[in-house]
Amino acid sequence: METIMNYLDNMFATLPKTKQMKAIKEDIFSNMEDKYNELKRSGKSENEAVGIVISEFGNIDELKREFDIDLNEEKEDLPSLTETEVNNYFKENKKNSMLIGAGVILCLLGVSLLILIPQLVSDGYITGFLDGGDRLLIPFFILIAIATGMFTYAGMRMGFGKYRSIDKRFELPLYLRKSIEIKNETFHPTYTLSVIVGVVLSILSPITLFIESTITGTASNYGVVFQLFIISIAVYIFVYFGWIKMSYDALLKIGRHSKINK
Amino acid sequence: MHLISSDVIRGYNDTIILYMLLDNDSYGYEISKNIREFSDEKYIIKETTLYSAFNRLMKNGYIESFYKDETHGKRRTYYRITQAGKNYYKEKCTEWDITKQVINRFIKEEI
Image 1 (cartoon, each protein chain N blue to C red):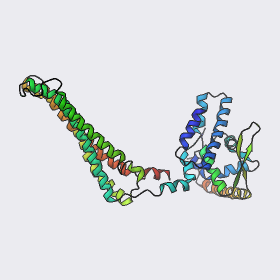
Image 2 (image 1 turned 30 degrees about the vertical axis):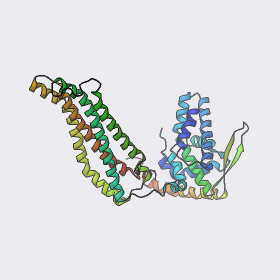
Image 3 (image 1 turned 180 degrees about the vertical axis):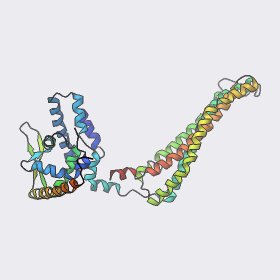
Image 4 (image 1 turned 90 degrees about the horizontal axis):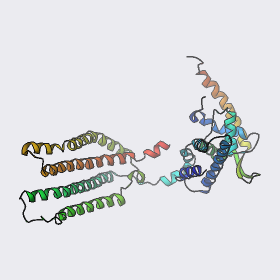
């Protein structure tokens, strides 16, 4: 019985909490309760009974549509996006993606330094500088700290910015939708290419190790560092182009939900 | 067994419910149970369909609701058909008669 109650609570969660809705919910619950008890009496198991009762609940959108007037009033005054705002949205997202991409690069760079510095020291390229074990961590932590700052900053901009959850807070005028759809289509090959390049780079990155070992005879830490470098480029490509794609998806999603309901 | 799709029957849910109220006042679960039995279990009306229809019928003044306490203490919302509801029901019956004739023209027993 509790499962049914929870199910109903979830179903009615998105509906306005009016007296009328409460009454309907109570009546439906009472019906479901009756049905459940009767199924149990006819020898159905707990699970079967709950399953049947829930499957015969129907579609909550039907009730939403029936009480359309109340729901539409709430939705009506979503602000329309202008062309400038759409452009700003893209700029904003690009900036955030660059921040996050660069942050990832800094993290990998930090790790690279942990490998690179001892190697340089042992090869005699650096002497007396940062060769103590603990001091080695200083550049690493500085880079990680900067990266964390960038992640946090980008996160804050996304979490509190004007364009957060854009698809639920704005309307998209038809003419803008069309132009965005066209831009999205022209962007698609670029996106596909970026994914391919990123994947190829990731797969090929260990090759630096092989190349190095064929040239010098041994695979050293320099190869690892170079591999990390290539991987960070790949990650940057994924983040940057992935973000643009996400911007398009979010923009084109506007109005989609409500249209399906009607 | 073939269950009737809710799309096909949509325009006649109101008629079905009004029919169930012609002779007796009734409440949600009883109405849906009777519909199931009357249709030889071929049509099971969903809760949301039932309550959308109740709302529509009440808005149009075809039915009225009232509370009734059952002997074992459960308080139920009962529905009663109004004169306007009976008139509407008759109209829908005529409409169905015509619809049936028209659709039948396009139905072949065998192909």
